[in-house]
Length: 347
Image 1: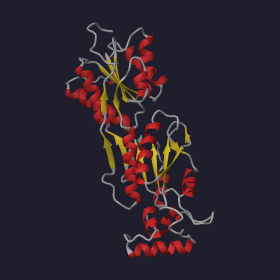
Image 2: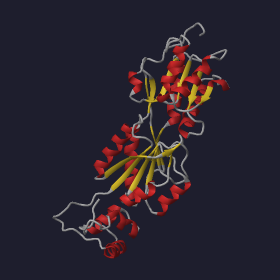
Image 3: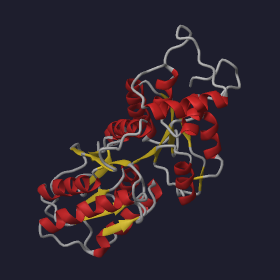
Image 4: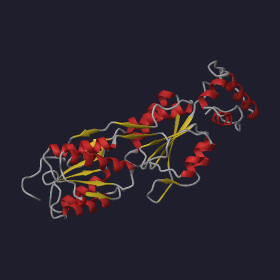
């Protein structure tokens, strides 16, 4: 971030906020660019003078670089690496710097604790990407009041109207997973989703229901289970399904993180995947390839989602209107070894 020649001088982001413009626009004024409206140039110049921003000679430094924040739920989560890669690559192409931080959250809700806005503001961030973070109404208001643009990546719940987000086509993925199982000959297909209020899992379960309805297959209420996204929670839910009088021959699991628990429940009853029951996941995390048997799953384009979110954020930073408030990227079914045609004999 460009500062005045003194160590306590204002950052370019502070100047932009005071003038009510984007950081790139303030940078154009500082560097004498011609493609700025006269009124905007006057307003920025007044703020520069009022705050004592000292312009460096052109030979001293290149064009100021804006900083954007990427706030993730956890740095050690299975998703963080792919999201960071996509955001960093897109930021490099745009000439931006990315600061990555893990959110301090309370309980399991992914809701940000107090204190992060002040750190973000002091850093002079030009915009923020939030991944798997749930913002409180007051935090949305705080960002809006300070004109800090932000974009949500893979939001857990529906954001307020007008809040830009980038997500995977969850309904499409759920339908593709279920159609794959139907195509193998399965008719008794169950689904295990995460917390029932999560919009992601709601879309995936809706896709499952649509595929079952299109094939004329019933969906018993006992075949639809929800729980925490954890091995223990999935193991418990899968155990409930296997204990039914007529257990399913296949199950669609709405998160790869839950699959190890599903495998444990199956093996705990002396059964095998996919001989006795087929399993399809969702995400295509690295573990999907090394778990045994290798998991058939729906690939969620995490890096592409982060890159698209960064490009949307850049449009907001430059005062443009994004092409769409909600962007959905296509998913793709990755067929591996955890699915097979059902046995003729019942479990």
